Amino acid sequence: MGRRHNRNRVNAKGRNENSSRFVRLDYRILNSNAYRSLSPNDRSLLVELIMLYNGENNGSLYLGVRDATHRMGLADLTAASHSFDNLMELGFIELAQESYFSIKASEYSRARCWRLTWLVGPGRKAPNWTFLENEPLPKTKARKRMERGLKVLKAYRKARDSGQIPVLDSDMPDPIRPAIMRAAVLDSHTLKASNGSFQPKGRITDSDTHLATTIGRGAGCLLAWWHNDRMFKAWIWSEMMLAQSMEWKSA
Image 1 (cartoon, helix red, strand yellow):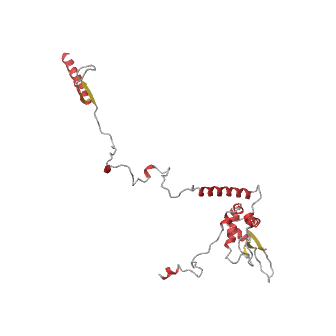
Image 2: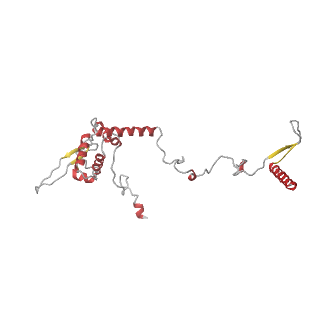
Image 3: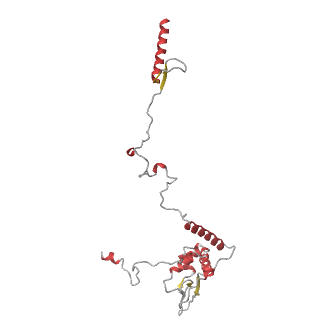
């Protein structure tokens, strides 16, 4: 019980001590034209750079092309290098310190050092949101990628604001599912036998038609009665058999 209680312990800032770190991406970044123009590799590299930020080391984010290539899951060093160039050109990152490789014993090697422009930099350097105003050049792949992304976002916002977003949990019947699998109606307002209705018959029972036998002919006939048509057919059959037997006797 003690261990379970300690899991919910909070620190002086009111945060759970066992909570993990997370990467923050501001919606102003995600909705910007510059971000919409980024390729999947560019976005992956941006996430890797944000992952290096611990809240205090902006401007000291060391990441070289080779390490970035492996972290992005790529095998081409040129692709990662292009992603660095694209992020710098649009204003997402700045080069804080160039790479330095030396073979002297008194010195050391280091990868290039980066700074995220929308966060406070070293020496309390103010954030820079210039990428919100930057866009790729016309008639480029990045420009077309940006236009397609903005078009889809605009359609999504319009559908969201008008309440046309598809409903995940719906009671509408599935057109693909056969009707026999649909759930029966549990509460119906249709009249039942218990409240005075006449239930439909599941099958039609056998019935006999009747013929009208009249006395006399013409429209002035007033006397008549109804009898079963089966009796009429039996009488015709008996008359035919009687006539046939008379013919046999006369022969």
